[in-house]
Image 1 (cartoon, one colour):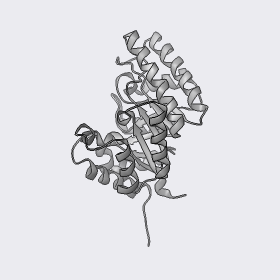
Image 2: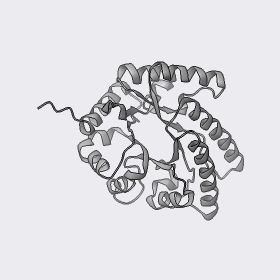
Image 3: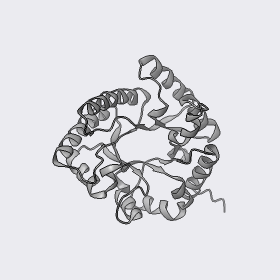
Image 4: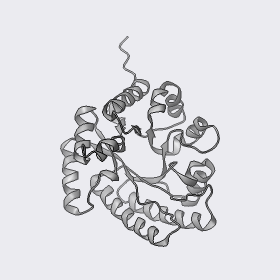
Length: 259
């Protein structure tokens, strides 16, 4: 197996270009394959313009044509809990569309946020969120994928809440998209290490890539076995920032030593 097959670039990294109309999902696939030499795609649904079958077929053809494996589908606008019941219903409708998309493009992991904005889950929020995650996990398991939350915003930035979710959902394919360092309390590096073995995927920002020699080997030692995916939030100079981030992660995770 090509050792570099375990690296990816999260397509949100090009949100600045997207805002300027300079990239779309097909340009992203071309970029991943030919600019960075990757065999993977990490797709943010902000680049997806339709969930119709015809569009998905064309997307899948473009993925296959480039020989890419979809290591993650990151789904915004699908968070499970919202204080507004109408928003919850709309988000669930989109979540099912994303799961259909994930199956058809062969996504290996899917991120759907929990959505609780408070610092802790109420009993109602826990029950509702865990129930929906179980439903989504069962759907994802049917095509061999993992599904879970991200320590992204709100309650999931607190380690105890993520632990609570794992216990409440209790599905074998439930996982965490580990957003390195994005914790609201405690030793952030220690929190990353604590979840390394249960992380289904990871997003590594510019700052953690710059500090790769310190932060990444402990995750390997802690049992992380997913794809190492870089994510730029800079919104400027994106191609070069991503190239630097990717080089840093490859250099540390898969050093080429010819001595």
